[in-house]
Length: 410
Ligand code: FES
Ligand SMILES: [Fe+2]
Image 1: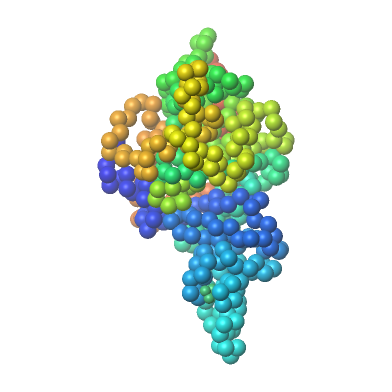
Image 2 (image 1 turned 180 degrees about the vertical axis):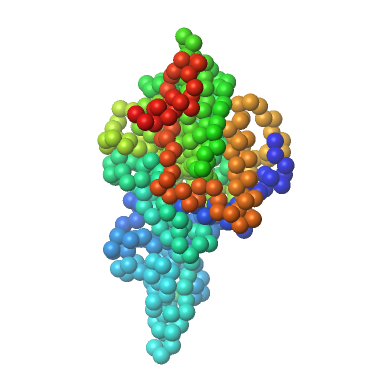
């Protein structure tokens, strides 16, 4: 349970301290493949503000405030001219760094000096994991990009998908860190799973342990399984919104919950294989494939359906949730919690430890940032050495920390 004040501090990001803190981290914004060189700009709403992303003919990405600083026309209507964008209302033209370079509606003797004085909001950009990431914080220079495990992989080794959910960003993040729901909500998927994640079905009340790290928290959910063994799922929480989760097969998965505004979130699902191109014979492929018809917002698959498409007949026939896809099960649940969960009314138990610990870390980091400290993990750059999320079975008396280090070293 949280106080109403802490719930607001954690969840509100529009003109709020948490929004200012979150902007200090590199933020996934738009799929790289959506931006064609010289092609149409794409609208992106983030942190309650509207932006456009475009790719110049040189391949570089610009990420600017949508509103033209002249008189407010949308730059989403703009013309991409080589590496710059021109507003179609009066022709003002901007570089990717936000600097105006032409204001042709002004008399020639004034135009150059006016352009030199106009600069619109622009973000630094970085491409990794098939996504354009942006830095919207207050520093003049962005921090180094974090060493997330999919950075630098060839295009065919990694695949991002996005979902725009009508709930606050923290609901998305909390869902990814809550291992106990895997055994309940996703049980019909577990039954059908080929990978070792199926073992999660054996124990619906895992014991949690964790270690706070420079980048966030390493959580272990430890389940009792047959023959005196323990099934350990290690989830890495990388500040401020990334979960690196074990899929149980050879593909890896990151889920990132970012704020569109206070009551909507854009969740990123990044699937990758660091050894070889992604293939069709993994469980994660089966989770993803039905969603790739709407890769920029697969919640489109649920819109217009009653109760998120839940099928009561399928439930009568034995399916636990009646929702056809594991990832859509999560989306349905998070939206069903409402736009912002009232965390003053929760009844938390031992299975909620990861959620509670994450909230505490976010609040501690927020308070430190408000007092002038750089937020935890924002400057970690290439020194980020999290696992990609692990799942393994060991004798119950084996120390999961040592086993995790051993798995990471393999
Ligand atoms: S509103 Fe964009 S140039 Fe006038
Ligand atoms: Fe889930």
